[in-house]
Length: 241
Image 1: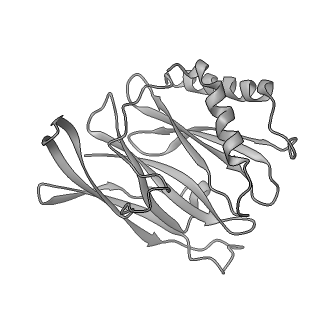
Image 2: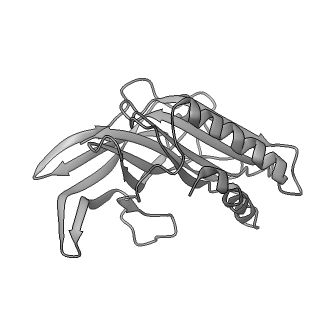
């Protein structure tokens, strides 16, 4: 489905998260697509801020080689408290996202179905490790079986971090294949400012790069301190197998 035809999907997401709920909030996630050469990927999350009630959206473009953010679109509808943003406001935001995608030659919708997908509603999922295969040839035959694990490494607590929450962490991801293990992701540089407050990570989804087949994109559920409790967010990282 073309990105231009998805305007109402974005609106539906905003309507859904506007329903009454607990004071802390949980973001929604959407995969957008890859660049033609597979070097960049775009994804989006959004929600309603606890406390203010303002709706927000956050779109990131990252390098599939380094997992570093190369560009970002972030917007808060702080003029709308008792009603949803209008159709014109959503269309304007969508146009800016599309323009940013074009800058990196990203065509929305250019991604394959996830190899693994565990939304938070999947209460039976093991969120620290997932087993999957890269290709399935028949119901009883697949190839390249792998095990992906995430572990948490404590990081330095920034000044002003609320001490009633667990200490912040950074994720480390390993891939196990044919009795061997390899590091899929760890922080190669300083922890990005966006994620210095995250204190928990778990595996949400795994995508295979449709152009560079040796690269995986991993969607992580993350949790960070919020205005009135823990807030659920997402982080996306990449690695080569």
